[in-house]
Length: 160
Image 1 (cartoon, rainbow, N blue to C red):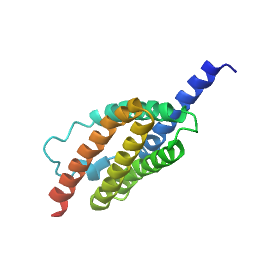
Image 2 (image 1 turned 60 degrees about the vertical axis):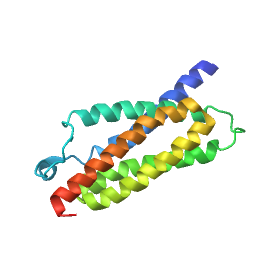
Image 3 (image 1 turned 90 degrees about the vertical axis):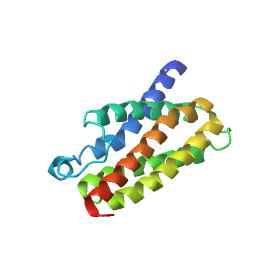
Image 4 (image 1 turned 45 degrees about the horizontal axis):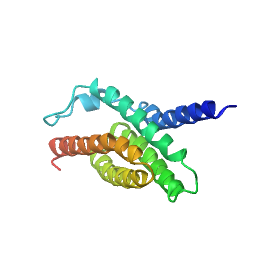
């Protein structure tokens, strides 16, 4: 197998891996419970979320590829990938907490941990590949915005 074919396979694998939380999260659809909630100002229409997440998962996958293709001798690659893996798990858990369990307060706490983990991964990726760190910035911003929306939903609907 040529080096180019291996690189393409690795890139596709990294992008595919980043879609796993979205695939798992898609099992927990908004439904009637979410539709009945009072939404904060600036809540985007429903179609924005799958478009945004598709773009973010692709960017995340490219960032991961840029890091894992670096020689393992580069300091921090293994730890950075481990932190990235943790944030992927947390990413998938949010949909279950928010839509599955219908617990916006608990989901908000999880989002704070997720955001901090993404920030850590971004800094670690940046040290290995500036481009990889830059590619995670939209994800960090989106999860920050999602946290604000989650907080608003929780406060508007539970008196929190």
